[in-house]
Structure formats: C-alpha cells, structure tokens
Length: 401
Image (cartoon, rainbow, N blue to C red; front, top):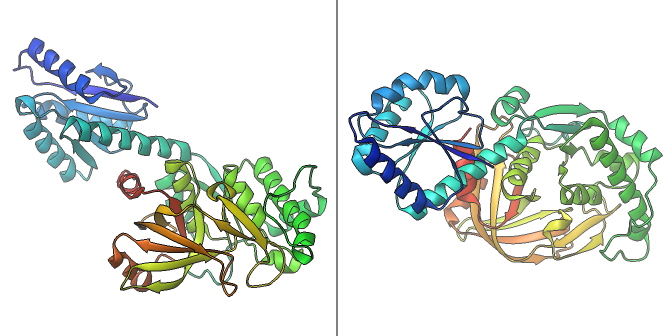
C-alpha cells in the first residue's frame, strides 16, 4: 500500500521556507509516504494519491494541471493542506472549481491526528477498491423467485465496483455434487445430534466441496447460491458450504441474492470478513432493537456453533452460531451499487428460538431512528452484519465511487 504526495506551489513564495514548512508538516503526520513533488508522471498508479497545496496562489497552476490528472485517473482528487501561507484558501478555491466540473474531491485539513487518520482511512478505501477490481462472482442457479427486488444491474456493478457477474447453471453444481467425495478429515467442530442431522452432514460437506471446485475452476472470488433448490434435488442444504466458503475468503451469499453478495464483498474488502447475511424477523422501531436470523453464518465469525436442521424445511443441516456480543455494523447495497444503508449498533445476545432460522441475533441500533429505514425504505430483506463499528469507513468507500 503506497501513499504518494505531489505538490503545487506558487512561485511567489520563498522556496526554501516552503520546503522547511513541508518537512515539518509531513513529519507531524507520522505516516508512510512517497514525496514526488511536481513530477506527476506516476499519478494515479498508487494506492492513494494526494496533492499537497503548499501555498496560496496555486489555483491557476492546478487548473492547468487538471487535464493531465483526469487523463491518468478518474478517482476523487484529494487536496492536502497545512493551512500555512493561505494554502487552505487556495484549496477551497480549487475544490469549488472541481465541483463546478462535476469532479469529486476533498480537502484533508485539521489536526495532525485527524489528517493522519483520514489519510489512513482513504488509503484503506483505495486498497479495498483495488482488491475488488476484476474479481468475478458467480450466480449459481439464479436468484430465488421470492427475491423480486434483489437483482443486479451488471453494467453498473462493473462500472462502480469493478466486479463481473457470471451465471452458473444449477446442473453444473448438481453434477459436481454427484461426483464429489469428501476428503478425510472433514468432520465439523459443531456437535450434530444423532439421527437425521448427523446423517445429513456428509451430504452438506459434499455441497461445500462441489461449490469450491466450481469457484476454483471458474476463477470465482465469490458466489451466491439458489440454495432452496437443493432441498428437492439432493435433500440437503448449502448452509455448511456457505459458512465454510466465507471463512476461507470465498465470499458467498444465500438464495441467489446478488445485492447481498455485493454487500459482503465490500465488507470483506474493507474489514477482512464477509459478515453475517440475515433478515430482520422482528423490529421495535421505538427502541431501535431488531432480531436478525438466518440458518448459516461464517465459521470465522462465531465463538461456537451447533448443528440443527434447516428451519423452513426441517431437513439437511443448518447452523446456530454464536457471535461475540459487542459492536456491530449493518450494511446493505443496492443491485446497481448506487444506494446503500449502513448503521452501527450493539449485538446484545444470541437466541435459539425454535420458531426462527437457526442463528438469531438481537441488535440494538446506536441510533434508534435508523430502525425506520427497515419499515419505510429498505433495500430488500437480507442485510449484512459485520463485527465492529465501520460506518465511517464504509461511508468513505461509497463517497469514493
């Protein structure tokens, strides 16, 4: 990860004094960077490119430079300023000019601690976008019939996120399952009660191996599975398969839900975990408290788990996972990546109500008013729950698109 710093400076200012001020300012930030000065030949090729406006009177220089910058990169333009020598005023004039030309940008200015934190955040966002570029995601069997609002605009997804969506016929998966043999050492840590659940585990593990083979053969970084079709075709579920794939970094969502898959890919790129796909089962809009539930959860998110049947069908293998209580972030992006929802809260406890999907979480939103979104303007029903508070980082990601 490389942060490059370029400079623009008015010739009216004393070069020696400006250079001394530059050294002092950059040293105060305590960040790793490459100072490239006025050599913009490599602009756009680093994780993060910053333009350090060092003095006032540099606005005209920037306007002449802008066509070269846009030819090299279409990313937002970040203006770094110390505030000395009228540099903040110049940066404001430049940013206003960018806005007039419909170009995204931001002035990075404030205390040394704030500037350092913001640069590190923007670098993390840029790194996440680089990680996503060119990745291929599979839609195995198409979205479930009931997901009437959860399809994707493939062109918009490619343009905004750099991701390619491709179809995988369900028959390809069924053929893989038929040929799949679980290698030795595939036992699960979760206890399976004797009887139908334990008997179903080998078949559930075979689905995992089949999906993994498809992902490897096709070069997929993630996938979404029309999992309910497996209930009738192989009398089993994809819950274990998706839990394992997500834990291994192959981002995977249920029910052929592409917008949820996109949300999980973004979460993975930004935070290192794909998150827990779930839908609200009960909402208290006055308290801002929500019960989320689903029959699978990535194994790397939980302290422990138990195996049960799949809730709706009562067959196969579902997962009741227990994620540590504490701060969480709820995320959902639309199918064209043009709209998103993000809120922070606290996971208060996990439950095991037999009348719901097996993994159940009670989450208290930090801002109770955010609960109104679910009842007035939701982006589908599934949402992604990520351990930790990441709202500011996620908002920075979407601002960068």
